[in-house]
Amino acid sequence: TGAISSLQRQLEIQESQLRRTKSEKEMLQKKLRERENQLQAMSAKFCSLREEQEHEEMMVTMEEKNCSLRQVVTEQESKLAEQNKLISELQGTVSQLQAEVLTSRYHLRKQQRAQEAIQSQAETLQHRELQTRVALECVTSRFERYRSKIIQATFSTAGSKPPQAEVTDEEVLEAMQKIINERMEFHQMLKQKGVK
Image 1: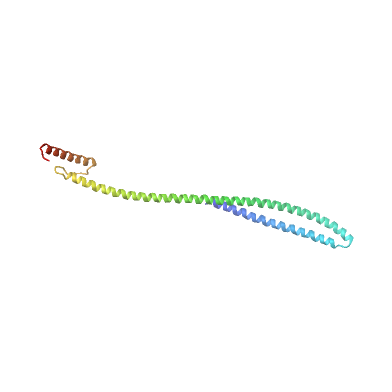
Image 2: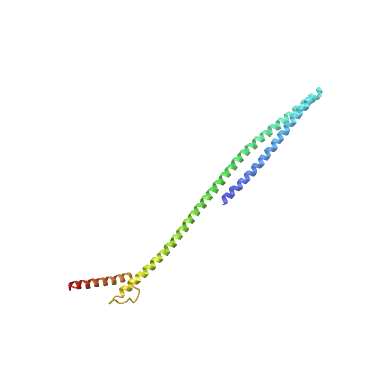
């Protein structure tokens, strides 16, 4: 997604700045070692001087250079401390961006799983709907056949007029009730006459 891409770009920028800062730190450390080596070399040279005049002149020169070197070392140490602080801040930013990327990916995977679950439920419902529709059509077909047989049996009875148009359920019930009533009356009449 766009959010993850943006976070990854920020992460790459911070990592690049971190590498550049580490490189500058290494360069400062190298210069510091070179200055220290120069200082040691001058101290060794001082020990090898034999003549007093040369010794005194060298002492003055060495003191001046030592002062200059101490100033350079102090500056380099200050810069090194700043670089270390910057590196620490950049590492914190990189860690934060990495955590945000992981969180975004987790939420994205969670959304994808939810969408897959919804899709699966929708497919299940569609399958059930299809099964229900097929079952309904089957029941409807059987009901229509049964209704047709009832209509045929009802209106094929002697004395009944065949329907001229589509017959409603109420008309079928009325015709059946009429036949039942007539048969009950006929049966009652036979009982009264002694016919079983």
